[in-house]
Image (cartoon, rainbow, N blue to C red):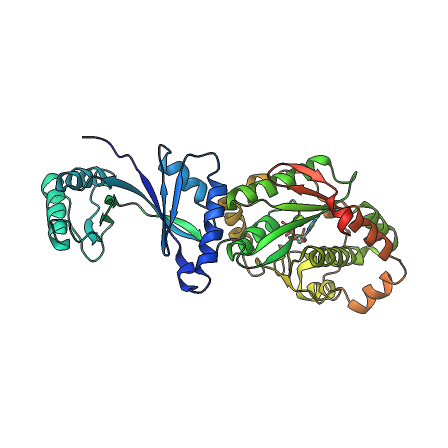
Amino acid sequence: MSSLKYDLLLVRYGELTLKKKNRKMFIGKLVSQIERALEGLDIVIRANRDRMYIDLENEDAYEVINRLKHVNGILSMSPIIRLEKTDEAMKENALLLESTFKEGDTFKVEVKRIDKAYHLKTHEIQQLIGGHVVKETNRSVNIKHPDHTIMIEIRYDGIYMYSEVYDGVGGLPLGTGGKTVLMLSGGIDSPVAGFEIMRRGVEIEAIHFFSPPYTSEQSLEKVKTLVDIMADKTGVDIKMHIVPFTNIQTTIYDKIPDGYSMTTTRRIMLIIAERLARKIGAEAVVNGENIGQVASQTLTSMNTINAVTNFPVLRPLLTYEKNEIIQKAVNYGTYETSILPFEDCCTIFKPKQPKTSPNLDTVIKYESNVDFEPLIEDALNQITTYTSKNEQESTEFEDLL
Ligand code: ATP
Ligand code: MG
């Protein structure tokens, strides 16, 4: 008897099925994301209206599943064995699948008979294969709540058999929901916020405020690594716009009273993020804020910060518990990088006692003593852009701004 060797991977789309009108576009986006995630592997993709088959050639099914685990728009995946169309082949492979089940687990057989020419009817196949497994292994059948279902599909190009189902992240394929600017620090939260917004099919370009020499090259490398991880997991290229922020930070440090420096820093970050967003055609800014977590994230504080703009600011992590965010960071694969101990620009200029309820009129009064506008324009003009995949920096933005 041969051991299990999978020929295909079945990919189920999930929510996408609901969007009848846009289905073609959604599937197209999903296919290109999958191709990107599987780059370098020898596979062939066949996408139908409601499911997709990936021909594995000689690739390992679990390697492919692992690479697709974070691709948005995939509900679940099953590795499939394709057999010649005989009863014997079904019987033999049913036992191979059965041998992967835990002792004591129950099973049932489910049959889809697409090729009506096959010599046995649906219930006959069910009885034949179910009966064979019971006879050979003594395993119990449970029709209502089986631990495992042996799926048999009688198709024109062969018999497909499988029993394993692996969850995908669900959500919607990237690129189907517009574009946003993600405020990306080196912390735990903002990369998770990026993953969460991408789950809804929304593309991101990241913005990172960088204050050399107060923040090191290593801290920048760390953020680039986070961008690479996000790109890798979701199967898209991600850009990060790096804003030189030193002049603004030192000016704030000199000119704005300590308790309000954090508020002004955040306000200026938001102004710059909005302007960048408008330039690149993004429709919202996304950040990793979480209600009540730190001084800058009380409702009053968010209000005072947000007052600089009418632009939508999305906060996907707003109501999560910290440990939920950490768990997500672990799952998405960013946690280990996020906890590396390099300072980010805000840690270094952190006021001793930031106001938890900064008053809007007060901050406006303090800011009116400083001409931030030329500094903001300078910072925007000096943006450099890092792209996840080819790891190149360019100053392409200078031409646009
Ligand atoms: P994070 O773990 O994402 O850093 P946090 O809980 O530490 O979040 P803050 O450091 O107060 O919170 O930052 C709040 C949000 O502001 C971040 O989630 C991020 O979106 C944005 N942000 C902070 N620092 C930067 C930075 N240097 N560049 C870009 N965005 C930043
Ligand atoms: Mg932080």
